[in-house]
Every structure is written in structure tokens, then in C-alpha cells.
Length: 199
Image (cartoon, rainbow, N blue to C red; front, side):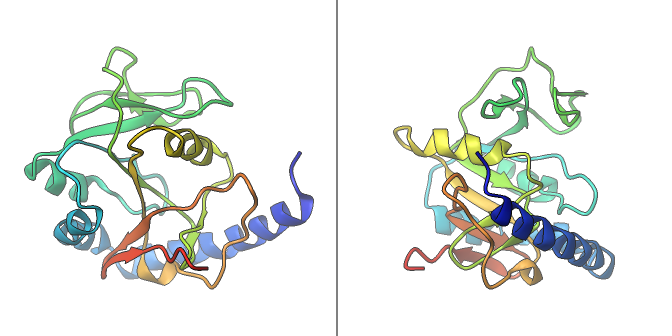
């Protein structure tokens, strides 16, 4: 059962965060490419050999991780995208390369064809509305990433979970409940910010 006070706080923050992100998109259209310049900082922070990196297809004012994904591909990483295949279940990740056809998944989002192989990412890049120093992420409210992260954190060798954001999307504290999963860090146009685990 959801907490109405928590959900109201998230909704209020989401409205403000959405306006801020739209403004940042207009003021800083170069940020997608500046994120790609931070690929070495990201790889140094997560300290993992090349594997599968899960991107997302940017919608609205979300930062586009594709330039960053292409930089990671040049460093030996294989790319994947998420797909919603069951409404209340975790996301499925499927192999994908730029230029390959996408179809709408169950949530209406662009996703690889069902015939694309399912993969297990060792790095997941996720969009967000706002983040805080403890690694809490405010998403769109569907819960897909939180369900997915909860499952993956319980598995052996869980992936690195990294939010993609403008530096100015940081807030003092994101309202969070017991089902909200924290990120390992945030990659912004100014570098990698590890989540503080002491908060």
C-alpha cells in the first residue's frame, strides 16, 4: 500500500523538477555531448571491465545517453535498452545497436524487438527528475527501475546503477520510501558523483 504523504511529496517535487529540467535542456543543449566526454570518469568510478551497458531512449527533456553509449562502445562495451514486457515486473534488457529498429513496448516506450537477445547489464544508466547526495532518484513514478534495481541488487555481482543528470538537478533530499532504490552514483556534465552512503 502506498503512503499518500510520500506520494504527494514526490508529486510536488516532480512538478518543480520537470520545469527545471526543461529549462536546463533549452539553456544547455550541448550537455548530451558533454556527458560523453565524462566516459573516462565513469569507467574509472565503476572500475569494471567492459560488459553490457543499458542505456535508455531519451523522451522529452531527458538527457540523451546515446553519445555516452557510443563512447562506451568504443571502449569495448556492448549496448542494450530496457523493455517493459510485463506491467508489474522488472524491466527486461535486450541487446541493441544504434540504428536498429525499435518498437513500442507494453508501456508505449521505444524498445528493441522481442527477437533481440535478452542480456544482463553490468552497468545501467537511468534517467531521473532529481537526485540527492545519498543517491536517491526521483523518477517518473512508474516504479519500473526501482523494481528492477531491487531484483538486481539481490543477485550475485549486481550491476553498477548510475543516474544521468544535469548537475543542477541535485536537491537536498528526494522523498524516499522503503521500495525506493538508491543509485551508486550520478554522472553529470561536470563528472561522476558517488552516492554518499553515510546519509
